[in-house]
Image (cartoon, rainbow, N blue to C red; front, side):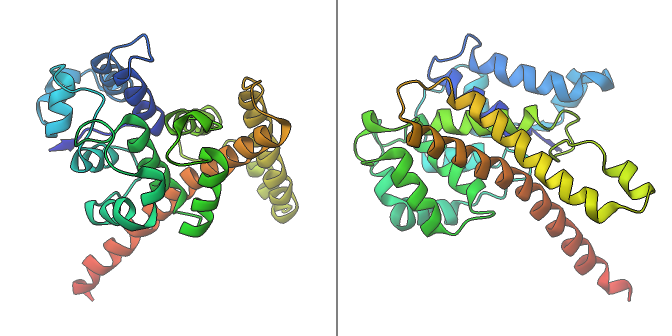
Length: 263
């Protein structure tokens, strides 16, 4: 059966919709995501009939899910995100030990809030290029006193939505690569190394400009605070792309190991 897959921006919009912070209802967010990836085939309905719908998705589709999640439901949602490798064991460790100070106890009865879910999804992305201590240091800067949400420079779900949107807007063709032109022409002319350096600089410049544009809409922050948010957006956007490469590497390793019996 086909799996229901969401981009990170889709997931961010779903979480925000469940908090009532989007005009669209959660079901409409899911419908838009599905339609965008399947409308070309002209077989939207037949394909959905053979798509796996997890229990948490089933509740959201039926309008029976509030903006509160068990840890298993957060894992289930995380597994819907493209090129992610969320596991229950990892998230249990993060909740109990590695990021306990930022998550704390479930805030809605025995369930976790949207922001707590977002923190776990952010950790999943950032760990592709940062160690846990570096992530904790970033969280201390962004979220200040973990037990007090009012002093956050940016709410976790807004951070997740910001870098997800930033990445997708700079990945116009949806190939999971930040788009900078000129590489193909350089390769043809034998100047790949030189233009690759220019591409890296251009990519960074695009990221900085896009992140600056977002943080300019946060006038309540000081200059240093805006720079901290901006830099985190840059790191997270790069981590998203890195997640794609890690996923691709895993696929090729698995294919090699599986096909080894033919040797």
